[in-house]
Image 1 (tube, rainbow over the protein chains, first blue to last red):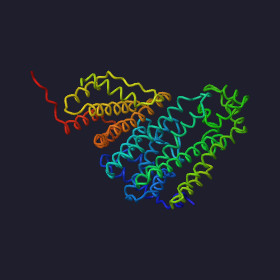
Image 2: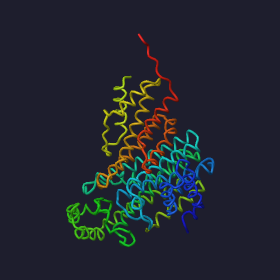
Image 3: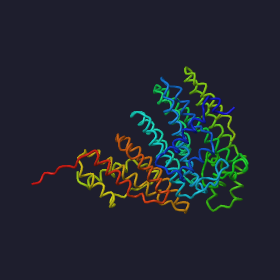
Image 4: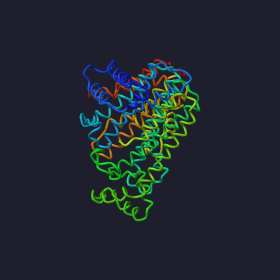
Length: 329
Length: 148
């Protein structure tokens, strides 16, 4: 069963809201590369995980938020995510996403950069249309300001620690929080606040989003070593070849001989040299150690569900928990 | 507050706002900052508000500059995109911290229009300072100076 069906969320309604935001933007010409690009992006689909988190968060409130406002907020979360992916793809030089050519390959770097900027600007404009002053402040603060700035910080940290084999575990965890977990946590929290949840509830939801988000990224780091090139769409161990010292590598560095082999790798090392070390990491205890930390985050997330048992929507958190826990993609 | 004081204090505020990991250094002495600072000083508003408007202008303009120059060179490209994104998010943070919802609301469609025009290859550099001038002249009257 699809996650949206299990959560009883009409994803088509969110997609329609995103499409309408662009289609009925009077500042866009009828035939516009912006309009076409954003509509193509929406129609290419996606999991819509972040909008779903916003909606699930709203189920923990003290009042039901106006449906239109909630859908717009959900669409905003997806716009923020999609805009960041456009910029990520340019930075990574990615040619395909979801089996489609990436936007910058269809247009160019300059256009793609500004289409993503348009999406961010449009959503800020749209949030002002539907919210009262206090809500505007909260949604803007969480979704448009804090989450994107932390996303950038995560990217800066990644850039600043390329091939840095002395990276501390805390730095890796902070980077992971900024790059992945924070937006998921924020989505749940924004949804809860929109429905005027108690502060302790929105904080628990934030912590839940953080925990599953951290586990999600660690699994992603593991999949980079575990899955086949065909399934990943990039070479096995591509993260390490790009200088990213992820969790399995951090643990592998603690082993004397393997650590030395990893430290010998640099930007100019050959593919064969990388492949040899990547194979060593794959069969080392570092993989299980990384899995263990991922499990610990999932355990933490489960305990947070237990804290929220008085809410019927805690079942939705369980559904999300299983979705993350069973993930092998 | 003199124009140079306004500029100095605004830049001190902005520098505190930027995370060291970003490694962004803001240049104080540019003609466009001086022009805006001088313009703001002609209007009757409190100093905190003046600093807020100037700070928002600087962050937005630097963000746009960064994204206006996305090169093909990989290292440079990454920095330009990240810096532009980061400065934009700090603009929102800074404006919200200074309770400038009216400015955010007024500039939202303006920023959007700049991106649309840039994609269409149309001139867009004049739009931001013009919008801020309009925002200020609509809300504030010119300061009266005593003539001795």
